[in-house]
Length: 277
Image (cartoon, rainbow, N blue to C red; front, side, top):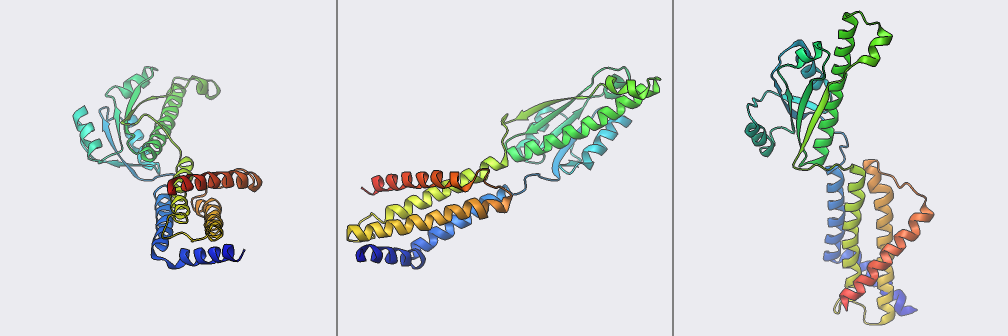
């Protein structure tokens, strides 16, 4: 028992005094905060967008005005004359999306037909792509409903009859480079616990490597338990403190989280023992 407690005490001192352990702990927290800071802005603002207005009508100008009014979009005055220009702008990261308003937009609306606005979005960055798409779709949809309602009223259709007849402007979207979508809440927990997994493996393995491990089996068991308890505390810190920093909270009770976390760490201990051997 004395050797077991001695091993625990020595390992606890090592964690806070040995330089390599200090560097590991600082690296874990630095990388965790870096990840959280990267994805902390769930709604991104003022994303640069180029608008190619070939119609230049009051309706197309209203679309541009509504686009500029959204918090996600910031219109940049950039000439887009061809698909090559659009591809170049994407590669240079000059804009995150390009909105093409056709030359017959107003004409099609006046005829009661469904016009089409084409939107090309660079999805190389999922967060940028999703948010700029949301802003563009909302702006165009709002203008579409208002224009159609006004048009029908001018034709003498009553308000209660005009609303069901509104023809929306469709958005033909091209998710360039990455047609997938994702959510911020899936990213931070996965990356933070991957960093924790690597950190825990290194610490546990160090308790078994000759030269850094305790000489006796009891001392080694004490060192291993110290690392296990220390890292279990770090895992709870990640779950209930660090992730709270980006408004991510566990969606289940502690009595469920506890066994899952313990099993995860026990498996890491077994993997570390295999690596050390």
